[in-house]
Image (tube, rainbow, N blue to C red; front, side, top):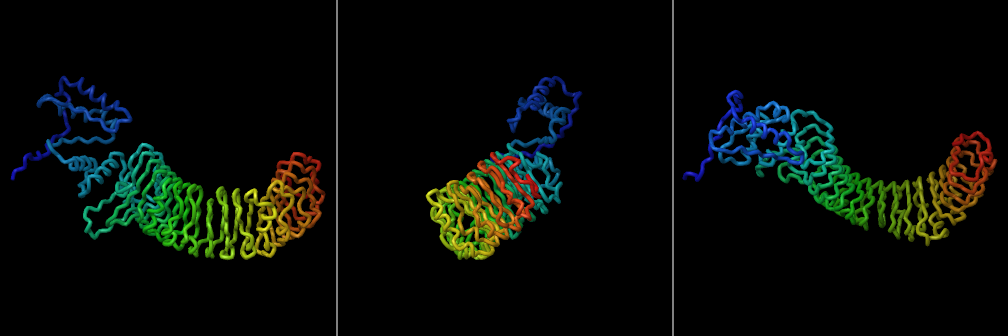
Length: 529
């Protein structure tokens, strides 16, 4: 059967033209050159047809323009093709790419050909950078695609920053295509990459993978996604990912996408994910080696899943949100609860955390229910920082928190913040004989407590924001005190001569004293600041 219309063979015509034989076309050539050379920057494609009956010199005019000296200087790359009457778009693109690269092309899809053609026209040639180890692409605000880099065998660190028009990351970046699903060949994309950073890609919606016959990022250990607010989906083919940092992504879906195959995670940092209400339970169940979890600025966050309690390797949990109970986190060493404006209850079962070294509860203005007993059970506790809670929690209730702490021999660093109308300190803290550093802040005391001499191991004392402080008497012995910091005490007029008794004092820092005269500061062996 004869086809209705045959594809005509490509006509082989060279681009050489003898200028002396061209007559009467100068005005036409000048006008076309002007249009080409003055094209606006916002126009990506400019097509100028030259039409007329055969023999008028259309081809001659095109040759003259192609070989013009100004055109050669203006365009780094030029391609001239003579096409048949009918030609598939893919074949047309193949001809252009072959002309540019002067190499025979393997069978590839139209999308891959377009991608390679764009890279070639932009002067991006993978083969010229075979040993590249670290690459950062930044500031391409109008670029809608990323050059192909997946075949860089030795690339270990890749950063993509500021691609504001980029909406999708996919096969074009990887530079591979599987045309035969049944093929036994396995391709590796970014085979040596260890760290990948996606930052400030404000239009990114989707990050696609390749489903069949490709190992995606087989060696990736650290992934950071920052300020990609519209990102909804992400590939889940990371085999040995150890550290995940997601910040400034509105949707919780990228985290959920990762749940299916991720099993190697050790460090998880999540910040400003607006829609996140709960850490994916499946992620915590599969990543039993998690040691460090940090959650911050997730306004919709409500709870932690039950699987958190079985993370026996967890050593550090820092969260700005209600965290619930932490039973059975027996390896936890650092716990910080900070800036939880809506946190009301904090049922801390400290006896289930025998490894805890540092505990901080700060800036939780609505916190009412606090642990009443148990701090003395933290036999390894080194540092403790406690702020006041809700205003309805009075001093007596606040003081209960410290019950039994005097029996805690491990604690060396203590910071206690009070309220301006509390005129005394919790009595228990004056009995910590092993304490080396103490910060007393925002209390309404008029003088340091008289039993300060019990702190015989104290090396650093800070009195901050105690605005009613009027007297300082250091007649009691603190033989090891080396650093004394006193700040923001508007009513204090003079320092006691008892400073001379502090035989080990090396540094004295005085700040924001309105009434204290320089002559009222006794001369001694200290180093004033």
